[in-house]
Length: 411
Image 1: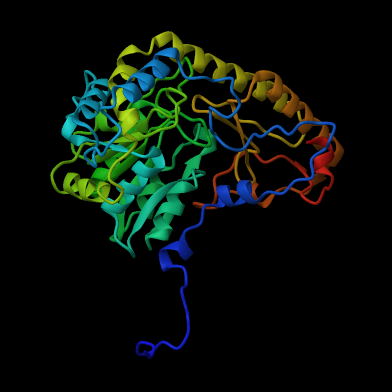
Image 2 (image 1 turned 180 degrees about the vertical axis):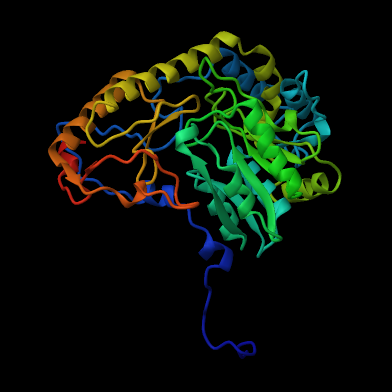
Protein backbone atom coordinates (compact mmCIF):
# COMPACT_ATOMS: atom_id res chain seq x y z
CA UNK A 1 0.00 0.00 0.00
CA UNK A 2 1.15 3.55 -0.67
CA UNK A 3 1.03 6.42 1.88
CA UNK A 4 -1.99 8.69 1.89
CA UNK A 5 -1.87 11.83 -0.22
CA UNK A 6 0.51 14.52 0.99
CA UNK A 7 2.31 12.39 3.59
CA UNK A 8 5.74 10.86 3.09
CA UNK A 9 6.91 10.35 6.69
CA UNK A 10 5.75 10.30 10.30
CA UNK A 11 4.86 13.70 11.77
CA UNK A 12 2.94 13.62 15.06
CA UNK A 13 3.33 17.07 16.65
CA UNK A 14 1.75 18.28 19.85
CA UNK A 15 -1.49 20.18 19.26
CA UNK A 16 -1.67 23.94 19.25
CA UNK A 17 -3.59 23.82 22.54
CA UNK A 18 -0.82 21.74 24.12
CA UNK A 19 1.91 24.03 22.79
CA UNK A 20 0.12 27.13 24.05
CA UNK A 21 -0.47 25.74 27.55
CA UNK A 22 2.09 26.83 30.13
CA UNK A 23 1.92 26.83 33.92
CA UNK A 24 4.92 28.90 35.09
CA UNK A 25 4.65 27.91 38.76
CA UNK A 26 4.50 24.19 38.00
CA UNK A 27 7.28 24.51 35.45
CA UNK A 28 9.57 26.04 38.06
CA UNK A 29 8.66 23.76 40.96
CA UNK A 30 8.57 20.49 39.03
CA UNK A 31 11.79 21.16 37.11
CA UNK A 32 13.73 22.64 40.02
CA UNK A 33 16.99 20.83 40.62
CA UNK A 34 18.69 21.75 43.88
CA UNK A 35 21.92 20.78 45.55
CA UNK A 36 20.69 21.29 49.12
CA UNK A 37 22.86 21.83 52.13
CA UNK A 38 23.28 18.33 53.61
CA UNK A 39 23.26 19.80 57.10
CA UNK A 40 19.87 21.49 56.67
CA UNK A 41 16.65 19.77 55.61
CA UNK A 42 14.74 21.36 52.73
CA UNK A 43 11.74 23.47 53.77
CA UNK A 44 9.31 23.88 50.85
CA UNK A 45 7.40 27.16 50.92
CA UNK A 46 6.09 27.23 47.35
CA UNK A 47 2.98 25.11 46.82
CA UNK A 48 -0.28 25.86 48.61
CA UNK A 49 -1.14 22.25 49.43
CA UNK A 50 -2.39 22.12 53.05
CA UNK A 51 -1.95 18.34 53.19
CA UNK A 52 1.74 18.08 52.36
CA UNK A 53 3.29 18.69 55.80
CA UNK A 54 1.02 16.42 57.82
CA UNK A 55 0.19 19.06 60.42
CA UNK A 56 -3.23 19.93 58.96
CA UNK A 57 -5.26 16.73 58.88
CA UNK A 58 -8.84 16.06 57.79
CA UNK A 59 -11.33 15.84 60.63
CA UNK A 60 -12.44 12.35 61.78
CA UNK A 61 -15.90 13.13 60.40
CA UNK A 62 -14.44 13.54 56.90
CA UNK A 63 -12.58 10.23 57.10
CA UNK A 64 -15.68 8.45 58.44
CA UNK A 65 -17.81 9.85 55.62
CA UNK A 66 -15.35 8.71 52.94
CA UNK A 67 -15.07 5.23 54.47
CA UNK A 68 -18.86 4.96 54.56
CA UNK A 69 -19.12 6.07 50.93
CA UNK A 70 -16.54 3.52 49.84
CA UNK A 71 -18.03 0.68 51.87
CA UNK A 72 -21.57 1.30 50.69
CA UNK A 73 -20.65 0.30 47.10
CA UNK A 74 -23.19 2.88 45.90
CA UNK A 75 -20.69 5.39 44.54
CA UNK A 76 -18.08 3.32 42.71
CA UNK A 77 -19.61 3.71 39.25
CA UNK A 78 -20.46 6.49 36.83
CA UNK A 79 -22.45 9.47 38.10
CA UNK A 80 -24.19 12.21 36.13
CA UNK A 81 -21.48 14.44 34.67
CA UNK A 82 -22.66 17.38 36.78
CA UNK A 83 -22.68 15.28 39.97
CA UNK A 84 -25.09 13.18 42.02
CA UNK A 85 -28.26 15.10 42.87
CA UNK A 86 -27.93 14.40 46.62
CA UNK A 87 -24.40 15.84 46.60
CA UNK A 88 -25.53 18.91 44.64
CA UNK A 89 -28.43 19.42 47.05
CA UNK A 90 -26.00 19.25 49.98
CA UNK A 91 -23.79 21.90 48.38
CA UNK A 92 -26.81 24.10 47.63
CA UNK A 93 -27.95 23.95 51.27
CA UNK A 94 -24.43 24.63 52.51
CA UNK A 95 -23.91 27.57 50.15
CA UNK A 96 -27.29 29.23 50.69
CA UNK A 97 -27.65 32.12 53.12
CA UNK A 98 -30.08 34.86 54.10
CA UNK A 99 -28.83 36.79 51.05
CA UNK A 100 -29.12 34.06 48.42
CA UNK A 101 -30.76 30.68 47.92
CA UNK A 102 -28.74 28.37 45.69
CA UNK A 103 -30.68 26.06 43.38
CA UNK A 104 -29.18 22.54 43.18
CA UNK A 105 -29.66 22.76 39.40
CA UNK A 106 -27.07 25.54 39.41
CA UNK A 107 -24.42 23.42 41.16
CA UNK A 108 -21.83 21.50 39.15
CA UNK A 109 -19.28 19.28 40.88
CA UNK A 110 -15.82 19.51 39.32
CA UNK A 111 -12.37 17.99 39.72
CA UNK A 112 -10.57 20.66 41.71
CA UNK A 113 -11.07 24.40 41.65
CA UNK A 114 -8.84 24.56 38.58
CA UNK A 115 -11.33 22.25 36.89
CA UNK A 116 -14.17 24.58 37.88
CA UNK A 117 -12.28 27.61 36.55
CA UNK A 118 -11.53 25.74 33.33
CA UNK A 119 -15.23 25.07 32.77
CA UNK A 120 -16.16 28.67 33.49
CA UNK A 121 -13.54 30.19 31.18
CA UNK A 122 -14.34 27.71 28.41
CA UNK A 123 -18.08 28.30 28.78
CA UNK A 124 -17.86 32.09 28.54
CA UNK A 125 -14.96 32.93 26.20
CA UNK A 126 -14.19 32.12 22.58
CA UNK A 127 -10.74 32.00 20.97
CA UNK A 128 -9.63 35.54 20.18
CA UNK A 129 -11.69 37.07 22.98
CA UNK A 130 -10.11 38.14 26.27
CA UNK A 131 -10.68 37.74 29.98
CA UNK A 132 -9.56 40.17 32.69
CA UNK A 133 -7.47 38.82 35.57
CA UNK A 134 -5.96 40.47 38.68
CA UNK A 135 -2.31 41.55 38.91
CA UNK A 136 -0.75 40.24 41.08
CA UNK A 137 -2.79 37.08 40.76
CA UNK A 138 -2.85 33.32 40.45
CA UNK A 139 -1.15 32.09 37.26
CA UNK A 140 -3.67 29.33 36.51
CA UNK A 141 -6.08 31.81 34.89
CA UNK A 142 -3.56 32.59 32.18
CA UNK A 143 -2.61 28.93 31.83
CA UNK A 144 -6.20 27.86 31.22
CA UNK A 145 -7.13 30.72 28.91
CA UNK A 146 -4.09 30.99 26.66
CA UNK A 147 -4.07 27.28 25.93
CA UNK A 148 -7.53 27.74 24.41
CA UNK A 149 -6.53 30.76 22.34
CA UNK A 150 -8.22 33.17 24.76
CA UNK A 151 -6.26 36.35 25.43
CA UNK A 152 -5.54 37.56 28.95
CA UNK A 153 -5.51 41.19 30.08
CA UNK A 154 -4.53 42.22 33.60
CA UNK A 155 -6.08 44.84 35.85
CA UNK A 156 -4.08 46.25 38.74
CA UNK A 157 -4.57 45.76 42.45
CA UNK A 158 -3.57 48.67 44.69
CA UNK A 159 -1.14 47.74 47.50
CA UNK A 160 -1.54 51.12 49.20
CA UNK A 161 -5.26 50.30 49.59
CA UNK A 162 -4.92 46.76 50.87
CA UNK A 163 -4.75 45.25 47.37
CA UNK A 164 -8.20 46.47 46.40
CA UNK A 165 -9.03 46.52 42.68
CA UNK A 166 -8.00 49.62 40.75
CA UNK A 167 -11.53 50.23 39.48
CA UNK A 168 -10.52 52.82 36.90
CA UNK A 169 -7.93 50.48 35.42
CA UNK A 170 -10.39 47.59 35.47
CA UNK A 171 -12.89 49.63 33.47
CA UNK A 172 -10.25 50.78 31.00
CA UNK A 173 -9.30 47.18 30.31
CA UNK A 174 -12.86 46.29 29.25
CA UNK A 175 -13.45 46.25 25.50
CA UNK A 176 -15.77 44.70 22.93
CA UNK A 177 -13.79 41.46 22.96
CA UNK A 178 -13.85 41.02 26.75
CA UNK A 179 -15.82 37.92 27.70
CA UNK A 180 -15.54 37.89 31.51
CA UNK A 181 -13.84 39.33 34.59
CA UNK A 182 -12.13 37.03 37.10
CA UNK A 183 -12.29 38.21 40.72
CA UNK A 184 -10.20 36.31 43.28
CA UNK A 185 -11.39 36.97 46.83
CA UNK A 186 -9.76 36.23 49.26
CA UNK A 187 -6.68 36.77 47.15
CA UNK A 188 -3.89 34.40 46.21
CA UNK A 189 -1.14 35.64 46.60
CA UNK A 190 -2.07 38.90 48.35
CA UNK A 191 -4.12 37.54 51.25
CA UNK A 192 -6.53 40.47 50.95
CA UNK A 193 -10.27 40.26 51.69
CA UNK A 194 -12.58 42.70 49.90
CA UNK A 195 -15.22 44.52 51.93
CA UNK A 196 -18.87 44.64 50.91
CA UNK A 197 -18.72 48.17 49.49
CA UNK A 198 -15.75 47.35 47.26
CA UNK A 199 -17.51 44.28 45.91
CA UNK A 200 -20.52 46.42 45.00
CA UNK A 201 -18.15 48.78 43.17
CA UNK A 202 -16.73 45.84 41.22
CA UNK A 203 -20.23 44.66 40.34
CA UNK A 204 -21.07 48.14 39.08
CA UNK A 205 -18.10 48.10 36.69
CA UNK A 206 -19.24 44.71 35.40
CA UNK A 207 -22.84 45.93 35.05
CA UNK A 208 -21.88 49.02 33.06
CA UNK A 209 -19.87 46.88 30.67
CA UNK A 210 -22.35 43.95 30.53
CA UNK A 211 -19.70 41.47 31.64
CA UNK A 212 -20.18 38.29 33.68
CA UNK A 213 -17.87 37.58 36.61
CA UNK A 214 -16.01 34.38 37.42
CA UNK A 215 -15.54 34.51 41.20
CA UNK A 216 -12.63 32.40 42.45
CA UNK A 217 -13.62 32.06 46.11
CA UNK A 218 -11.69 28.94 47.09
CA UNK A 219 -10.37 30.71 50.22
CA UNK A 220 -13.78 31.99 51.33
CA UNK A 221 -13.54 30.19 54.68
CA UNK A 222 -9.94 31.24 55.36
CA UNK A 223 -10.61 34.77 56.60
CA UNK A 224 -8.86 35.97 59.75
CA UNK A 225 -10.78 37.57 62.65
CA UNK A 226 -11.62 41.21 62.02
CA UNK A 227 -12.52 40.62 58.38
CA UNK A 228 -15.71 39.24 56.85
CA UNK A 229 -16.13 37.40 53.58
CA UNK A 230 -18.98 38.26 51.21
CA UNK A 231 -19.65 36.10 48.18
CA UNK A 232 -20.12 38.10 44.98
CA UNK A 233 -22.98 35.85 43.95
CA UNK A 234 -24.91 36.76 47.09
CA UNK A 235 -24.59 40.49 46.35
CA UNK A 236 -25.36 40.55 42.65
CA UNK A 237 -28.87 41.43 41.52
CA UNK A 238 -28.08 41.79 37.83
CA UNK A 239 -24.52 40.71 36.97
CA UNK A 240 -24.17 36.98 36.16
CA UNK A 241 -21.68 35.42 38.60
CA UNK A 242 -20.08 31.98 38.34
CA UNK A 243 -18.79 31.19 41.86
CA UNK A 244 -15.98 28.64 42.23
CA UNK A 245 -15.28 27.20 45.68
CA UNK A 246 -14.68 23.83 47.29
CA UNK A 247 -13.39 21.46 49.93
CA UNK A 248 -9.67 21.67 49.26
CA UNK A 249 -8.83 24.58 51.55
CA UNK A 250 -11.90 24.33 53.80
CA UNK A 251 -11.53 20.70 54.87
CA UNK A 252 -7.86 19.97 54.04
CA UNK A 253 -9.09 17.35 51.62
CA UNK A 254 -8.18 17.43 47.91
CA UNK A 255 -10.98 16.06 45.78
CA UNK A 256 -13.32 18.34 43.90
CA UNK A 257 -14.74 21.82 43.88
CA UNK A 258 -18.02 23.39 42.84
CA UNK A 259 -19.45 25.97 40.52
CA UNK A 260 -22.65 27.75 41.42
CA UNK A 261 -24.16 29.63 38.50
CA UNK A 262 -26.19 32.70 39.38
CA UNK A 263 -27.10 33.25 35.75
CA UNK A 264 -29.36 30.72 34.07
CA UNK A 265 -30.36 28.62 31.07
CA UNK A 266 -27.83 29.08 28.25
CA UNK A 267 -24.73 29.23 30.46
CA UNK A 268 -26.07 26.37 32.58
CA UNK A 269 -26.52 24.22 29.48
CA UNK A 270 -23.05 25.16 28.26
CA UNK A 271 -21.47 24.16 31.56
CA UNK A 272 -23.39 20.88 31.56
CA UNK A 273 -22.17 20.04 28.06
CA UNK A 274 -18.58 20.86 29.00
CA UNK A 275 -18.82 18.69 32.13
CA UNK A 276 -19.53 15.71 29.88
CA UNK A 277 -16.00 15.79 28.49
CA UNK A 278 -14.66 13.94 31.56
CA UNK A 279 -17.87 12.26 32.80
CA UNK A 280 -17.85 13.98 36.15
CA UNK A 281 -15.75 14.28 39.28
CA UNK A 282 -14.74 11.83 42.03
CA UNK A 283 -17.86 9.78 42.82
CA UNK A 284 -16.64 8.38 46.15
CA UNK A 285 -16.23 11.89 47.52
CA UNK A 286 -19.60 12.88 46.08
CA UNK A 287 -21.15 10.07 48.10
CA UNK A 288 -19.44 11.35 51.24
CA UNK A 289 -20.22 15.01 50.63
CA UNK A 290 -23.61 15.33 52.39
CA UNK A 291 -22.19 13.83 55.60
CA UNK A 292 -18.99 15.88 55.33
CA UNK A 293 -20.84 19.17 55.06
CA UNK A 294 -23.35 18.26 57.77
CA UNK A 295 -21.15 16.62 60.40
CA UNK A 296 -17.78 18.38 60.35
CA UNK A 297 -17.72 20.50 63.56
CA UNK A 298 -17.08 24.23 63.54
CA UNK A 299 -14.23 23.63 65.99
CA UNK A 300 -12.28 21.90 63.21
CA UNK A 301 -12.56 24.93 60.93
CA UNK A 302 -11.69 27.29 63.79
CA UNK A 303 -8.56 25.36 64.76
CA UNK A 304 -7.28 25.29 61.18
CA UNK A 305 -7.84 29.02 60.81
CA UNK A 306 -6.02 29.72 64.10
CA UNK A 307 -2.96 27.82 62.88
CA UNK A 308 -2.85 29.83 59.65
CA UNK A 309 -3.34 33.16 61.39
CA UNK A 310 -0.66 32.37 63.97
CA UNK A 311 1.77 31.43 61.21
CA UNK A 312 0.95 34.65 59.36
CA UNK A 313 1.80 36.66 62.47
CA UNK A 314 5.02 34.69 63.04
CA UNK A 315 6.18 35.18 59.46
CA UNK A 316 5.25 38.86 59.38
CA UNK A 317 7.04 39.67 62.64
CA UNK A 318 10.20 37.82 61.62
CA UNK A 319 10.34 39.10 58.04
CA UNK A 320 9.58 42.74 58.76
CA UNK A 321 12.90 43.11 60.58
CA UNK A 322 14.94 41.92 57.58
CA UNK A 323 16.55 44.70 55.57
CA UNK A 324 15.38 44.63 51.98
CA UNK A 325 12.08 42.85 52.65
CA UNK A 326 8.66 44.45 53.06
CA UNK A 327 6.15 41.81 54.16
CA UNK A 328 2.43 42.47 53.76
CA UNK A 329 0.29 41.11 56.60
CA UNK A 330 -2.48 38.98 55.05
CA UNK A 331 -6.15 39.16 56.04
CA UNK A 332 -6.89 35.61 54.95
CA UNK A 333 -5.97 32.72 52.63
CA UNK A 334 -2.73 30.72 53.08
CA UNK A 335 0.08 33.02 52.00
CA UNK A 336 2.20 36.01 52.95
CA UNK A 337 3.78 38.33 50.37
CA UNK A 338 7.12 40.07 50.61
CA UNK A 339 8.58 42.99 48.62
CA UNK A 340 5.08 44.32 47.84
CA UNK A 341 5.02 44.23 44.02
CA UNK A 342 6.81 43.90 41.57
CA UNK A 343 9.62 41.54 42.51
CA UNK A 344 7.45 39.86 45.13
CA UNK A 345 7.79 36.44 46.66
CA UNK A 346 5.04 34.33 48.20
CA UNK A 347 5.46 32.05 51.20
CA UNK A 348 2.90 29.41 52.10
CA UNK A 349 1.58 29.51 55.68
CA UNK A 350 0.46 25.90 56.13
CA UNK A 351 3.97 24.88 57.23
CA UNK A 352 4.40 23.69 60.84
CA UNK A 353 5.36 26.69 62.97
CA UNK A 354 8.82 25.39 63.88
CA UNK A 355 9.67 24.88 60.20
CA UNK A 356 8.30 28.32 59.33
CA UNK A 357 10.48 29.94 62.01
CA UNK A 358 13.52 28.06 60.76
CA UNK A 359 12.76 29.10 57.17
CA UNK A 360 12.45 32.77 58.15
CA UNK A 361 15.71 32.49 60.10
CA UNK A 362 17.47 31.10 57.02
CA UNK A 363 15.98 33.86 54.85
CA UNK A 364 17.29 36.44 57.34
CA UNK A 365 20.78 34.93 57.20
CA UNK A 366 20.77 34.88 53.42
CA UNK A 367 19.57 38.48 53.17
CA UNK A 368 22.19 39.63 55.67
CA UNK A 369 24.93 38.04 53.56
CA UNK A 370 23.76 39.37 50.21
CA UNK A 371 22.07 42.66 51.07
CA UNK A 372 23.10 45.65 48.93
CA UNK A 373 21.88 49.22 48.59
CA UNK A 374 20.90 50.18 45.05
CA UNK A 375 19.75 53.47 43.59
CA UNK A 376 16.06 54.27 43.78
CA UNK A 377 13.93 51.70 42.03
CA UNK A 378 12.17 52.85 38.86
CA UNK A 379 9.09 51.06 40.13
CA UNK A 380 8.70 53.71 42.82
CA UNK A 381 8.04 56.31 40.15
CA UNK A 382 4.30 56.48 39.63
CA UNK A 383 3.11 56.01 36.09
CA UNK A 384 -0.48 55.97 34.98
CA UNK A 385 -1.61 52.36 35.17
CA UNK A 386 1.90 51.05 35.60
CA UNK A 387 2.46 48.05 37.80
CA UNK A 388 1.15 48.88 41.28
CA UNK A 389 3.72 49.97 43.82
CA UNK A 390 4.07 51.96 47.05
CA UNK A 391 3.85 55.69 46.51
CA UNK A 392 6.24 56.98 49.19
CA UNK A 393 9.70 56.80 47.62
CA UNK A 394 12.73 56.95 49.89
CA UNK A 395 16.13 58.41 48.89
CA UNK A 396 17.39 54.88 48.33
CA UNK A 397 15.69 51.54 48.08
CA UNK A 398 17.17 48.63 49.96
CA UNK A 399 17.15 45.45 47.91
CA UNK A 400 18.66 42.01 47.86
CA UNK A 401 21.14 41.60 45.04
CA UNK A 402 19.82 39.17 42.46
CA UNK A 403 23.38 38.25 41.49
CA UNK A 404 24.24 36.86 44.89
CA UNK A 405 25.24 33.23 44.83
CA UNK A 406 25.32 30.51 47.42
CA UNK A 407 21.67 30.62 48.43
CA UNK A 408 21.77 26.87 48.99
CA UNK A 409 24.22 27.49 51.83
CA UNK A 410 21.50 29.30 53.76
CA UNK A 411 18.33 27.69 52.47
